[in-house]
Amino acid sequence: MKKFVVFVVAIAFFHAIAGIVANAPAAEKIPVRAGQVGTMKMTGEVVSVDSATRTVTITTKRGSMTFTVDDKTKIVIGKKGKSLEDLKPGDTLKVTYNEAAGKNVAQRITVSATGKRK
Image (cartoon, rainbow, N blue to C red; front, side):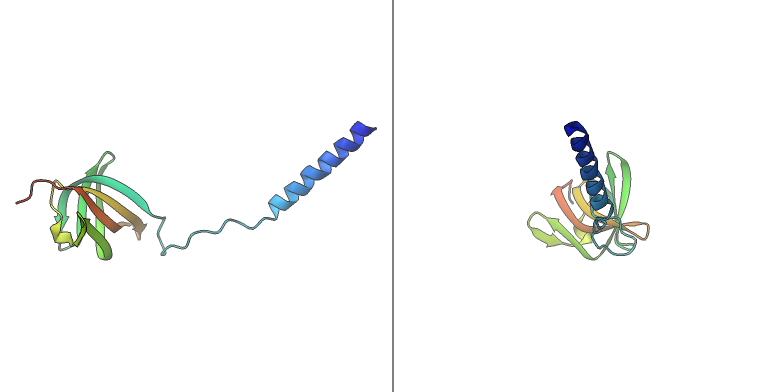
């Protein structure tokens, strides 16, 4: 009889836990701009910089990626803030970016090694 009571109490316990879990609120999502997936990072070498379209293209282990640079993008070379025009082919970059409206939008570009500069 004791085993039966323990069995019934155990089943009641598991049903109670299942009910609590089923009624738990869903996890909150971190708010991001519409169309964004979240912050991602990529490291690669600069292939080209296009000031007219405000893009920088790098080559990575996964292939080539192009990033859009906007007014909010912070570009750092050494300890100083720089501009898109200061990036040169051959520079090694670490890019923190978001995907928005089908584009990779750079939030921060940090130059970790400079290529041959003229």
